Image 1 (cartoon, rainbow, N blue to C red):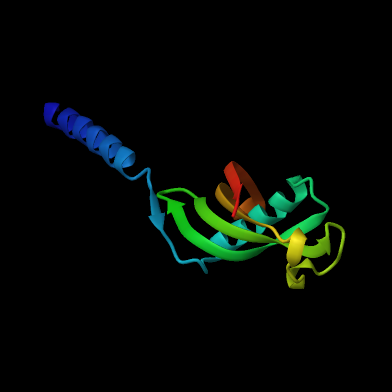
Image 2 (tube, helix red, strand yellow):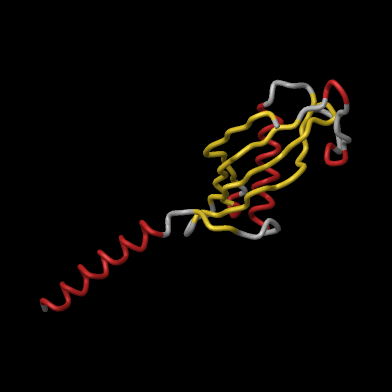
Length: 130
C-alpha cells in the first residue's frame, strides 16, 4: 500500500513541476485559425476603444505565440490609420491616411480565445506610436 502512496505523491510532484515549466508562450504559425480570429478581434477592439474618428487596419503581425495548454495568444501588431471612419462599411480595404494625418501604432496584446463559445477577451494591451 505504501508504494501506491509514494507513486501518487511522485505523480503529483512531477505534474506540478511540468505544469509550472510549461506556462510560457511558444511560437505558432500566424495563419492558425484561432490566432487569426484573435487578431481580428484585437483590431476591432482597438478601433472600438480608440477615441479617434478614423479606423486603423492591420499592417503586419510581428510575434505570434500561444500560451502552453491554453488558448491565450500573445501578439505584436502594427496598425495604420485609414481614411475610413468608424461607421463606414468595408473597412478591410481602406487606404491608409497619407501626409499630416498619417499615424501608425505598435501593440502587444494578450487575447484569451474561447472560440467554441464565440468569446474573446483582451487580457493585456499596450500600444505605442510607431
